[in-house]
Length: 359
Image 1: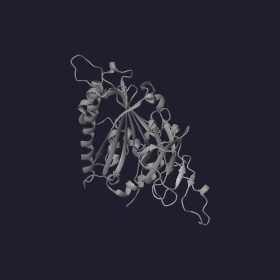
Image 2: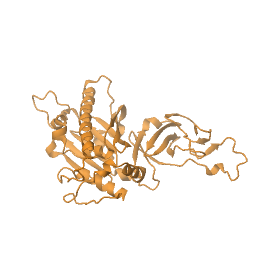
Image 3: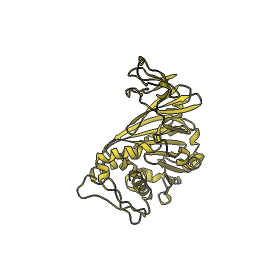
Image 4: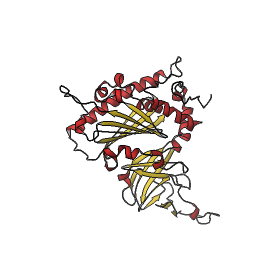
C-alpha cells in the first residue's frame, strides 16, 4: 500500500485526499511520527505554570511530556526517566524536584540528575550526563505550546501575525473559564476538514447561518495556519432569538484561526474558545474545548449561558455530520472528491501541508 498520495497545488484541478487516509491505522501512526511530533501543540494554560515549581503533564502524539516553571524559565521535558523509562511527573501540581515514580531517581527543575539511589559501583555511570531530554516550549497569551522537534521553527515564526490579527479581541489578556470534551466516531482529519470551510453552514448549521454573513465569509491561508473571517449579520427588528449581536461587541465579526495540524482558536463576542483535536484511533477522535474571556463571567450570566448552549448546539451538528462522513468514507464506491474553489481553499491548504509533512 502506498504511503503517499498525489496532490495538486492548484485547487481548480485538485482532488481531495484518498479515503484510505481516513480509514487505515497505518496512516495514523505515520501522522503521529511525521506530523504531530514536528508541530506546535497546545498542551496547557499559562496559569497552570505561573509560579515556581508548578507543573503539568500532557500527551503529544505517542509521547508524554512535563511542563514546569523553574524560576523565570518555562521548561518542558519528555516525561521519561533515563533509568528505565518511568514517569518523572504525573498529573499537575507543585514540586521543587521531579522524581521518578518507579525507582525514585530525582531531577532538578533544570533537568539535571540530583539523586540516583543505590547506583554505587556501576562502572561508567556519570550522573552529570543523565539529564532529562528537553522539549521546545513557548507561551502565547494564556496558552502554552510544546514541540517535540528541537529543530522546528519557533512558535512566534509559525504564528506570524496571528497575535496582531486577534489583538482587538484582547485574547492575550483572557483568562480561563471552563472546559468540555467530546469523543467522536471519526478520523481526526474529518473533523479538521469540516472546521476549515464555511461551505456547510447553510445546510448543517442553520442557526449559525443566521448569525454570520455567509456572502462575505472568507478563508485566508498562510504558511502553517489559516484564518476564517465571518462578519456578524446586523440585527434587525423582529429577531429576538439572535445569539451574536454585533452591537454588543467591540469587534463585529467571528474569527476562526487554525494552526496546523489540530489547534483552533474561535474568537467572537468577547470570548475565545480553543479546540484541540486529538486522535484516539484511526476512527476515533477527542475534541477538547476550553473557553477564555477578558472579563470572565459569573456562572449564572445569562448571555454567557446562551453562548455556551449555542456552542453545544453547533458542536452536536458537527459531530453528527462528521460521524456520517466517516461511515461513508468506508464505502466501496468513494475514494476522492473535488474541492469547491470558492469555498474549500482552507481544506485544500490543510491537505497540502499533510502531503508536505507525510512525504
